[in-house]
Every structure is written in structure tokens, then in C-alpha cells.
Image (cartoon, rainbow, N blue to C red; front, side, top):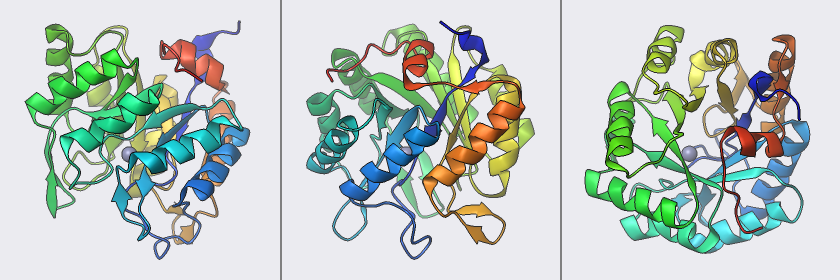
Length: 280
Ligand code: ZN
């Protein structure tokens, strides 16, 4: 087995809940498009795919049938680790935010560890009772929480839930930087958040907007894992739309290799993240 300490897990987040074909015509929205896109990203070096679904109108949805179809299409064709969102629609109920986890038992799912004002327009609600319930559902179904942290308070919430037994060590964090209402995507903010991690935790980071590349570079330098994709950025560079999600993955692979590391395979990511593995 190769040295896992030198491996960087690249997660692709191909769709998200918000960007539209008007923002970037290359964004994958329906299950066949998302599956094709994820397989291309896996070929390019992504080890994890973080998935959101859209309805017929292209709006974020927690419809579990769409998750089911997309997951099946991807599992038919590759072994990428699947990380399903639990917050793909601000109007979803607590039940619909968890139903797909119970049915599909993905290896990972997002766990947004606090509430916030979302994009200066709405509320992203993750109240304590919901987080306790979600933690329990994840444990019962063998789903590893990816603790999404938009500000330091969310990280401290996770430490509280670790102490309370709602979450189990080793924790895995995703620092989401640059979302309006959260923490800006700066190198200084990332270094600060990393300093708060409990021993033994694994972590990844993403930067939205102009902080994207500085965050990727800093994360690689600090020994973290990285997330890229059109959920976070529709622009590949200033004034140029991304041609595909794979294009982001390919660039990140080049950065990782230049840093004298190598991209983790899905099997290596499963080991690094201590995944229980789902019924495949
Ligand atoms: Zn997401």
C-alpha cells in the first residue's frame, strides 16, 4: 500500500443547488448528465463526488428518486465515493433531507453544522434538534458525515456533538469559503480554521469565486484535501467559463502532482476517511 500521507483526495461537486445553464451551459443537471460528468471526473482523478439533484425546472430538490437513479448510473460505471447532499433545497423538510440517506445508504453525506443567513436572501436552517437527528440517522445507516463549516462557530458545534456522541471520531470537515453569509475565501481564514481542528480529524476545503485557486494551493500546502466543481465555481478562470467539471479536476491533479503529492484513488480515499463502505 502506498503512503497515504502523501495523497490528496479530490472531490468534485458537479452541480450544486444554484447555478443554471444560463450561468454555464456545461453544468450537468439531470441524472444522465450528472452521471456522465462524474464518470469523466473519476477518469480525470476525482475520488469523491458530492451530489445535488435538480427537478424538471432545474431547481434544487431532495427528490430521492432522482438521487437513486443518479447513484445507480454512477455505480454501474465506476467506484468513486459518493457524498450526497442533505441540503439541496431550502424548502425541504427535515424528513426529505434524510430520506435518501436511509434508502440509499451512501458512503458519505454533508452535515451542515449550524444555521446561517444564506446569500443575503434566505435562511439555511440546521437547528440543534435536526443536527442531533441527522447525526443519528447517519450513524444507523453507516454514512460518514462530511461536516460543512461556513464559519468557526460551526466547527465548535461539531466539537460539541463529538463530545455528546452525536458524531464519532475521526471527524471529517469541509471548509466552505466564499459563500455570501459565511467566511471569505482567504488564505488567512483557512489557516485559522485549520488551527481549530481536533487531533485526528481529516479535512478538505473549497473556495468560491476569486479565492478558488489560492484556497486550492494553500490546502495542498497544508496537507488537506480539495473540492472543485461547478457547485462552487462556474468560471474556470477570470472571464472564462469552465468547459466541464473534469477540467477543474484535471487542473487540480496537475497542482497536486507539482506539489510532489498524488491524487488519492477512491480506494485510498475510503481508507483515509475511515469509510465503512456502502452496500454496493
Ligand atoms: Zn453541496
